[in-house]
Image (tube, rainbow, N blue to C red):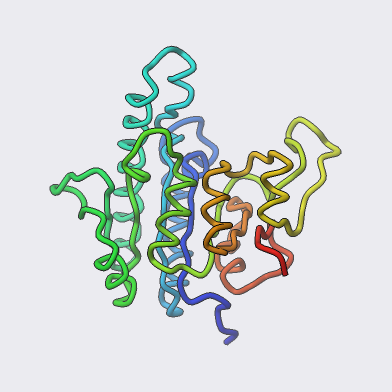
Length: 241
């Protein structure tokens, strides 16, 4: 059997992906599919950490636009991610994989606090670690949390799973002539003001030379394909060759 290209990865799941075909909430079929894919990858010996968004339940930026205090809206969004993380943990453990939720906002009854060395130890023991509540601070996205946690645990790559098949020069849903990038350098991503991830997240990855693959989760098997090094999948964001 062909070996995985990466030994330790961080998977960033957007909340919108978790809703599947629904407009809101958690799709049981999507959650089951993700958990089964992660179970197979875990059993192949890959160490997996996950950061989850909360947009399927609550979007802080939308509420801010409607007049809510930004910090309050962001904290509410962090709580939404905890709901998603607990749902993924339940799905994983029903698939037979041990997992741990670590939250940047302490809530001892449902999750461990984030402790870097403990997270790494869980990974070394074959457990999937799910990071909840973003960075624990308002004004930072879960993309930035993914970049931060990936750097802290010495992940080899960030896998950003979305509803599109990579990064485009404009919104492919609005512009049928949008151009898809196969590869991008960090600085080009920033200079072109692309929207697939926020600038803070990209800058942190650039500082730590941490590559990112942006790919479509809608197609079954793409998480494994990304980890096994399928060069035709999504868009790779990296430093200079």
